[in-house]
Each structure stands twice: as C-alpha cells, then as structure tokens.
Length: 102
Image (cartoon, one colour):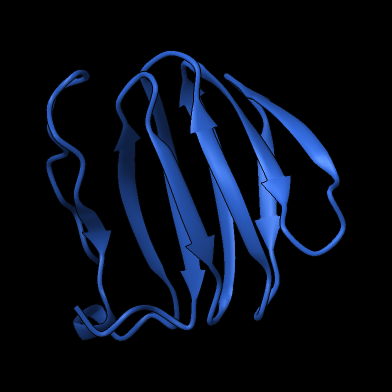
C-alpha cells in the first residue's frame, strides 16, 4: 500500500504515483496558466481528468476540437499530438501507462 499527502489545492502540481512505485502506471497533477498553449505528444497511453478551469484541445492530425472544463476526460493514444490552450488556469490529473521514468 502507498499513501501520500498531496499538496493543497492551488499549489504547484507534481507526481503522485511514479515508476519507482512499481504499480504499472503513473499519476500526476498538472497545471496550465491562463493563456498557455502546450503541444502534447503522447508516447504512451495518457488520460487527463480536468479538475478545474477551462480550455480547448485540438488534434493536430484531424483538427477535431474538444472543450475542456471540470469533469471532462481527454484520452490520448500513443502517437497522438494535440494542442491544449488554457482559457483560464487549468488543472488536471494525468494518468500514464506505462509510467514515466521521472
């Protein structure tokens, strides 16, 4: 069993479950400042669960758009490349399988 204290809401995100935990997946909190645009290229299966804020994600290969807001899940397959734009500060929990090494 692994039990960790997580930073209070509003503080900088970080790793919650790591490869060294040897459970087969990684879990981290991620934050994007309002106005931030990030290119995400998945090299593994990844899921973002939005916990606060608003934004948009656009699939670079298809142009498909999705609105991000609290409660929305965005799943990326290996090789997917998307552009995420945060309309407001955006916070999410990111699960990765397999986990990242760091």
